[in-house]
Length: 302
Image 1 (cartoon, rainbow, N blue to C red):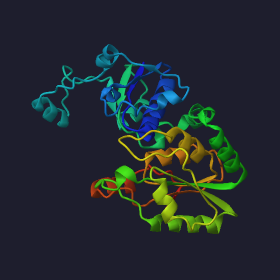
Image 2: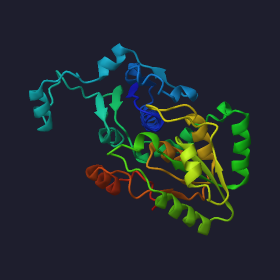
Image 3: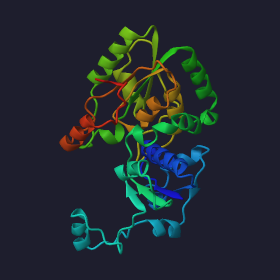
């Protein structure tokens, strides 16, 4: 049994699910999700994986506790843990974080088959081997209403480009960069030079602002029937936007896991994906981003 801690918004949920799905297939065991994060009233409406038809079950508290390390760890043992000593009284080998999960794939002998995994997993290497499966499983086109179905048909018939602009919670966030119009205009210019008759589909959690700022963009369409004012883990219309974004032939993404997934799920073998060079305002996080494989090597950074 693999139990994965699911937390935060849709983009993060997809990374967590995809990683756990790949591991459960590798170990030939069932997959369960820990949804305790969403028991907090401020988070309760943010869980979105139920919108997809996924082979998962909700883990019980007993199942989670049987695999998780003790959360009440004395400071002395936390210090000893940093020095390489982990008391089995508090730490369980079945509770894995981030890169330790990758090590499982390379061990000749695996002592356990049951794990509780936790992390952000912001890298396709955690699940790249099951991409075709994920592309199929993470399809919710059946949820699209009649207006979105018409938009989907238009997207499929054109040289469509999705442009995701995230504002809302990013406007006063000291950690994430609030991308400038220059990034988007330069990206649009790049695609105008490389693609014949592109049609630009704009998606945003502040679509009225986007309409005003990018009204002069040629061949532009603003998807406003799914957008709502941003709230904590805003989720109204996110599945619908994601399905339309992934159906576009090319993408200009924001510094957002949500639009990362819109681009990654795009099945066009000749797709052009443009991502921002600057993802964070936090210096440490930005350096880690620059040295990481978070952005697939075939995507273009501007």
